[in-house]
Length: 608
Ligand code: AGP
Image 1 (cartoon, rainbow, N blue to C red):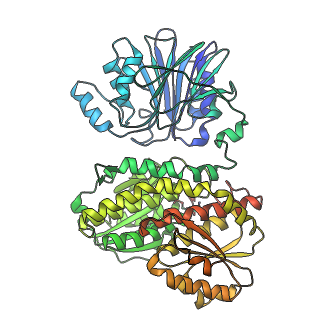
Image 2 (cartoon, rainbow, N blue to C red):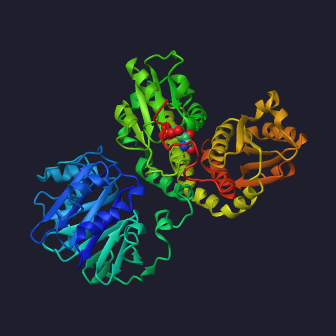
């Protein structure tokens, strides 16, 4: 996510802003910039790359004297990471500067409108449209201009805005993207998150959606989108700096698990409009979709597991054959692929060496490659023929959670769009599926809320030697991910098995008390899966079942049951993974492991 910091007060703004941006580096970014009013004009310095480049460029802010300013670290969503795409953005007269965190969904329409009025754009960002809109509506009253823009912009935004004609104030605006305001005896601050200003003040105001804040040296005023003055109570932050970076969570992994509802919501908000699925950046026409007769999904680790789910979902919804390969195998197996095939490379980082190499091999053979990637401007995103971004924001914990969930959502949307183009699902089924998708965020939220029950259960297994995860079909796909989550952060050996395959050897490993987690969300496979439960129980296993709400017969067979809310069976992995993520997390915490940075692992495996 992008980071915003602003300051107005007795002190020099630039050093405070740069220091605050440094505290937000954990959020991930690819460029940084700062705007300061120097007594005559707003001066902007910005650059792609690490924050230290900006610090050097401005001699730690000394080259930008002034008591009022805004700064930004950019996590690219629209427009690759470049100097010109970095924030802040100016209007043409350079009398208004704006920084933004979020996504302006109707920016193309607004940009066309502003260009038709003679406005010239210099960047590829959605944010720049805000600078020109503010210019268009500004007739001397900044608040009026801001509220007019708020009524015309769709999407999510946290904004910092400065007006050269009003150098005694900063404006902050919030809709969906978090933004806080801080105050101390010497001035006022805006920030995307608490860590940025904790050094200067523990007195903060959490802005609500559609609120505007006007910050003056020693005065704070809050307004509604209708310019009514609002009264807000300050909050005193008790956290220490390190806890603040994790939003009060003990680990980034837990924080990112809890961001999953919002990530799913953002993805749906971005891709569903007027009852249809829009994946603009995919740039694939309906006939492109119709011409696909075979799909190869290529990935590593959890992205591979998402691909296994994708196989079941795409084949069942769109009736197109899907093969899923580990990238490290695919790149050397000389696959037989014709030009009617589509290769989908899934990668959170967009930098995984094996996935990159597999993609390069395919493109060299003239095969079109679609990337499903979380990092805008990453190597896979740049080199793919088509791109579908996941909107998970930067993921800090090595063990992926929210990015994986975003990949599943992307695959559901892709499968439904493909099925609609192929005519394998009618409009009624399509609409029903959209409704099911829209319920997923709150269902995930519900599952996360009963984490203490899972923590208690997990504590019983911190000494386990080996834990198995089994399932059939889509439930096998999620068993793969549940097993990886556990072993990569708790260092306990674990295997995922197709439930029907266990008796072909591995069942010999089941001993008295061995935990077998059995995922059973696919009603048509319940009976088969239960027979596999009985097999392992007969050999002494303790069976944890993850199954659908209402399937209470499971309590006759399993020793411990976790229920997930009912959803479309194709989307069940999004819910079943939540208790499995929490289980792996709490086993690792119970063992005192370094959850966010597990031994031997890197967030992005950029070597073979
Ligand atoms: C998942 O928790 C691991 N961090 C790892 O398996 C990861 O999914 C894999 O390395 C692929 O990374 P990518 O999605 O960035 O390509």
